[in-house]
Amino acid sequence: QVQLQESGPGLVKPSETLSLTCSVSGGSISSFYWNWIRQSPGKGLEWIGYIYYTGSTKYNPSLKSPITISLDTSQNQFSLNLTSVTAADTAVYYCAGRSHYSSSWAFSIWGQGTVVTVSS
Amino acid sequence: DIQVTQSPSSLSASVGDRVTITCRASQSINSYLNWYQQKPGKAPNLLIYGASSLQAGVPSRFSGSGSGTDFALTISGLQPEDFATYYCQQSSSFPQTFGQGTKVE
Image (cartoon, rainbow over all chains, first blue to last red; front, side):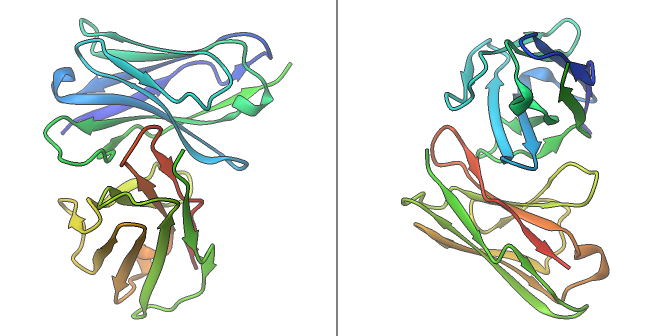
């Protein structure tokens, strides 16, 4: 059973970089597309982007803060960097997986979420 | 971006009721529509994918239907553990987008 666990600071200052890591356990990191999704009262659920084990990425162009998602296969982890954050980036951040065997782009595995507040 | 609009935003129901939640896409998404259940303080949980396929481990009282732009999630015989918020998600094109949620209370 694949499990995900987010980690990272809960408070980030405006204009700084938000960095989160998702640790993958119980399964192969090459069997999923790894995603970041966030949820805020104002914008609801918002897909941020994904990375595949090959290193290919895709990001949501609607996000105002520049996004980088990276993968460390040796550590079975993937990470999210959002630079130059603002208060609008305050949200619960989830990592989530979509099986590459699935016919549908549905998120079948989720971390428990981590709250990130952007404030000085 | 494709917009997905859920209705109603909330509904009141009782144990045993049949509940239907609808989701409308701003353009045709074929059957690329997924449904999730979320309880307070928890991550969303996948219920239905591809508009009508039941995710493994999900009770059969949950069903999905529709194609094109109009979709529905039906709970046949609401159970106490089903009081939650439900979201649809279109996966036809990037960026994938979610509905605003329907709270069943």
